Image (cartoon, rainbow, N blue to C red; front, side, top):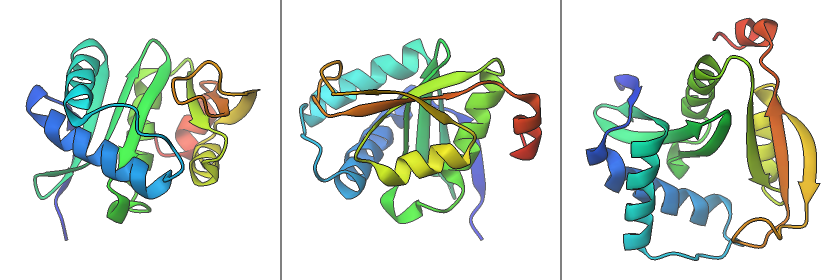
Length: 158
């Protein structure tokens, strides 16, 4: 059994974070355009973890998943494709809810039905749909919100 740890992300986690981001997007959203180079992703995620709350889930010392949130927004959550369904995403969402107990929002691509089901299962509701003109991928998306219910926190073991 792997030793699973949820901890704050550090600068030296960025290469692992970028690898998970790229592999996960390819596996879960092959229809999504790739807009940035590996080097651009490294710079972007370096800035993200420096400026926001960021966590990683490790198993036996290897980063398996990550989340980045700030100002009541869950901006990124990705899990290694072969670790989907492992509970890592649920642990990360729980940490985000602890950090933002008054509520949190996120954007998810409309076409990403699996992610929408996952977030709904975590207590998020769909509150807005767009045609994608507001995101750089130009793909229709959905804003989802968790309203900070104490009962929901308890129900999800947070």
